[in-house]
Length: 103
Image (tube, rainbow, N blue to C red; front, side, top):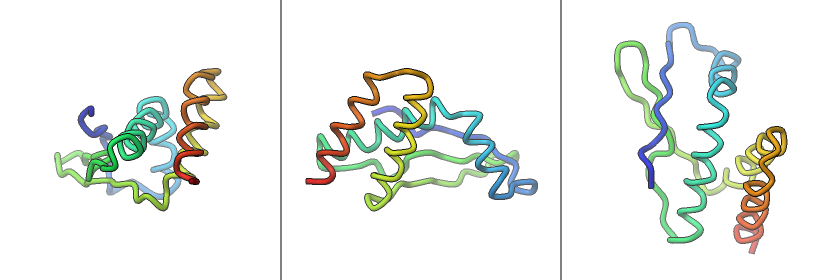
């Protein structure tokens, strides 16, 4: 499993809208990390504690996790992204992952 994704932020200027824009600028890495994170849980029955690490301008790190209850919603958003960039193999993988989760 890869190291958690590191996203650099400025918390003094960060609002919910800013955070969404920050993630949009790093969509590809972020959505690939979601798929990798959930896939590990499905295949191995375990998950990493940390999905991503937010790092502020002072170097302070904030751990970001994804609870199992959020898998379906997160994978749905990831599917939208991978459809948009026409990466249909990844969409197929996510579809299979969703089926496994819904069992």
